[in-house]
Image (cartoon, rainbow over all chains, first blue to last red; front, side):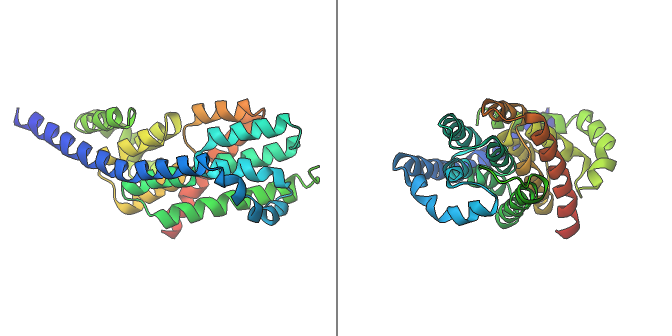
Length: 150
Length: 118
């Protein structure tokens, strides 16, 4: 009986600690993201990205899905991407490259902070993931699929 | 939260039964490549199959160090929620199989690299 009580106590204490930590990190983040979304700030942030996108053979139209994916998550990023592709702004090859980058690296803050809440190193997670996604996407856009997107 | 709390409770209970011990021993040799204990295989499965919240719930239920949690974090941020995210990619009209293969592959490679450099 004592052992079961111990497990139960351990569970309640551990749960409480986890839930509080996650709340303290995720709730302010969600509020911040809603503000970004509400004021359309992401569109404004895409301009400095254009030269960077060109290195991947991507047009400036890739900027919005790219940023939305990083800040708001894969579903929103893909949603914006579908819309841009319906408007004929993005070629199939560009679509694939954006999906490649976004599947390796999206929700950069939410995903990372969840692990940070339980003890992971923020810097290692963010830097490694960004380097990997940039490296792999460059590899495909310049070497494996070098046809100019058009 | 809906996923994380039940996973945490389940893992805490399972941790006190021999099930986790069996799984742990079975996967120990494979997990050693990533510098992780055998029981961390649960975190990887839950993260890949459900989502990051489930993985984080499982991490809190196990006793892992900062190094192990960071390695798991790198592997799982690169590749996670595969059933759900595959549907999202498919909706964008992009072939899923290749991307899935690349994600899992790079997740495993990253785990190896992290074990070497951390």
